[in-house]
Structure formats: structure tokens, C-alpha cells
Image (cartoon, rainbow, N blue to C red; front, side):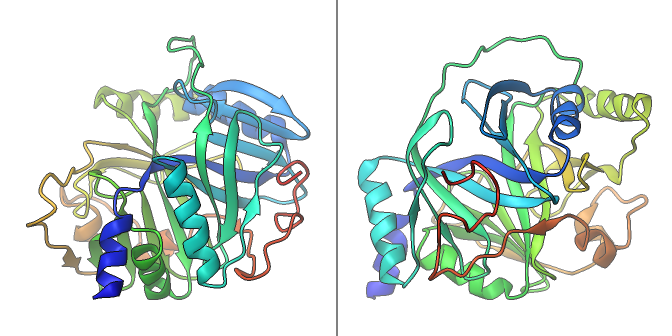
Length: 319
């Protein structure tokens, strides 16, 4: 009963996905992709890091100069200071070390920690939100950063951690633990866990117009790039999708019309089969699903009980 109360109490204390950070070997090439293809706006630079955004928030994407291409951390907003303190206490009660974030431009009241999988996460309370609402770009500017997909060896361990400690809920599964989609608000998912070698699979940008998919395909073609998969509609989440590789081989998704769960009392997660029709309910050509889910980049791996200031190995990431 106590465990159930803990889950209920923490539901809704995380407001949503804030930003994603990558270590990159050629930061100007990665900035070019973020601005000229995705259509983000550079919002700041400092100590080997570039910050970019599609909206009013200071950053939704953080690029860190490094000697390798990998994901650095995934960050979520919490609702209030009480929630931030509560999560820190809950994590430390689980033997998970937390590290205050200093030097990340545009935010305050934040800390990082490693989950059971070794992926690094950040929880934050305050981020500046005074970036221009309108700006010029030739890229396919999205509405917001929508969700991320992480690869991990033990999916169920991460599902239990995000349920019990972080207050997320399971929205859907594929083949029980091959892929699990989880939510922290009304959107079907803010994070997904994919069974496989430790790493980072994709990050998704929300688009509000179906015409953006046509523009994306034409824009990629003009820049000697191409779609990996799509346009189609997923079964889990019901969202329209298109995928391609970014400049560092992480998978980028443009996503629209994501399902919203409006009645938490009656919603029952589905268990979808691990087959192409789950990924593309419209039918048509689909990639080899195991090969597609193995795409992406490596991810920083940190011991949950030994978070240190140098854990990311990237200049400026923790200083």
C-alpha cells in the first residue's frame, strides 16, 4: 500500500521533457544541422557548449564539444521547488547520488543523477523563457521537443524505476519489454525504453502541420540527406512520424498528433506485437524493426551511486 501511495503522490510532479544534450566531435557541424535542418535558434554559447531552442525556453538542445558522439543527459522540468526537493530525497533514499548542476547557461535549481541503466538525467526547476517567439529560419522549425527513446539492456528495471521513483506511468508496451512508452503528463509518452545495447536511439520534435513532412522530405533531399522511415502513423501513441539521422547519427523524429490520455481512471496500456504493423498502421514499406531499433548513438554511462563532477567527461557539462 505504501508503494502505491508513493506512485500516486509523485504522478504529475514532473511537468514534462525540458531538453536533451549531446557530446559532439564537430560542434559547428552539429549546430549547422540544428539550425539549418531542424530550424532551431542558437540561444547561447559558453565553455565549449552551444544551446539551441525552438521556443521561448532558453534551450531544448545542448551541444557539448567532445572527442566523441554520444548522448550526455536528458532533462525534465519539475512543477515546483517542493517537487525538486522531494525527488532528490527519493533518489538519495534509493542510494542514487545527485550532483548539482552549475554552469549550464539559462537554468538554475537543477541536479543530475544516473538511473539504474546508467543513463544520466537532469531535473530542473527554473529555466529562462524569454527567447523570441518569432525568428527566421530555413529549417523545418518544430513546435517543441516532444520525447526521447533510450536503449537499455534491462527495460523493466527502468520502467519500475520511472514508475516508483519518478512518478511516470506506462502508456503502452511492445512485446512486453521490447519497447515501453511512458508518460508524466497527458501526452502518451515523454520517454521510451527500447531493449538493446545501452545507448540513445532518437529524439522527437513535435510538428503541428502535416505539410511539414513534405517540406522536411524536400529539405533533406536538397541537403543530400534522406528519410530513414516515414511518413507513417505509429500504433502506440498514434502519432504521425518521419525519421532521419542527424549530423552525428542520432535518430531524429518529426512527430505530430501524439495521443493524449484524457481519462487516467479508465486508460489501460496496450501490449502491441513486435512487428512492422505496430510501427506503421497505415501499411506500406517499413524498415527491418530490430535493425531500426538498434540505430542511434552511444550514451554516457554512469554508476547511479557514484555521480561525480567529471562523470560526463565533457568540458562545461558539470563545471
